[in-house]
Length: 297
Image (cartoon, rainbow, N blue to C red; front, side):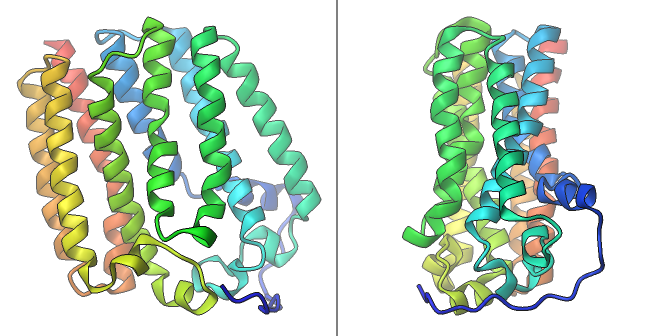
């Protein structure tokens, strides 16, 4: 990767310090929170046979917000020397100077401390698992410098709430959860590869690695393959947990959306790829409705 990039001068509308911190945590762009919340909710509902405890719902809901925010802060700290050269990220707070690196580090420490307080209200097994999950979240932003597969690390990080939820509810890790884990991991790679397709030209220019770059002209085919395998894993998760028609109807609906997203990215243009990524939030909701519907019958 090029090491002689100079930090560009960015002209951006002035914002207050609080606005800068708000944007640093991506509170103005909640899609990442929804995408992280989805697998967490799936696992909590299944592990609780449809009725999660209010305490765990609150802990995991807050945990999703806190850890997604922490991940965004780490990402921007790691990419300070790159974001100014990418069209989509040129006005992030650390690039414009709205927030300093030291302020971002303090914020990160606060967020990680809050995450620790939350997980300490569960059980020792969940606490143990949380350290591995936090590690995944912290190393993900650096993977794009070392490997063309950072999306797989993100997939593991976004899926780690699944074993944590089962551990919090049952204090065990049933084998079926790993089908759900694999389904979410592959789905994450799918939508984050679509996201990376938006930045592919900029990433090539600055030397950032991604599955979008690795896949090249095979991107649509490999995304389609991962979509198919993800659907198979969703089906196997349903079989493992003895879920019924509402769940499998939701998976069929997900398959239909996958086909629509293939159409959106057919020209590999930024608008279509970003639209496919942005619509992924509905997939998580559709699967959740299928799971809830199963236990509501």
